Length: 283
Image (tube, rainbow, N blue to C red):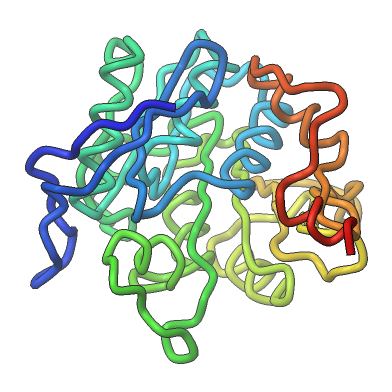
């Protein structure tokens, strides 16, 4: 892992601190593709990987893809790897995340088929720009209530975690405006509030086709759910097998290797436990 220095990065909100001295790490994300991400800012995580995996499996033949609230470009780049024939549009409102997404697309040689737009996904003008033309729409919205959550001292992390510009309902509404008649939308949301996904899809004129819960550790409740939605569908909601990331002691389970392999990354068959897990086992 190499570190670079962010040059001229902005905080993404009025009064936010400059990121000029904030180091960036250079991390593998899919095949030979790499991303720059801030050490002290928002970094891609399991929700991005699981959503991109679900989306690529759901629409493997997609030729036009839209990634809403793309952040630093993690889902965008993972889908570019798995869907090499697709043209991808991505939208990001926050300055620092948009800047990183543009840099990450360019440095991976994807500028000919990936375009990153600076704007708010809730803006109806974006839908009129493209029309309902996308085979696949994705989104990993924040799912912490701003009335119950404390903002981070870092603006990028705050907007990635807390619903400062809306949650899953806003993403479903924006996705519905852009989704082609036979397209699929894949979006994650708070597993504790399936009613929000259900109500948001209904309000947007979409039908939920499936749900997959993601559990951070065995024995714990699901943290978030990945939903697949479409304009039309028949039959009951399909509840898919959950993704359980770690065992009860915190060691990674084989599904983690499956996800990494899907995106062209290797991982040791017998991965050494993290220092925290080793410490617990030694007690």
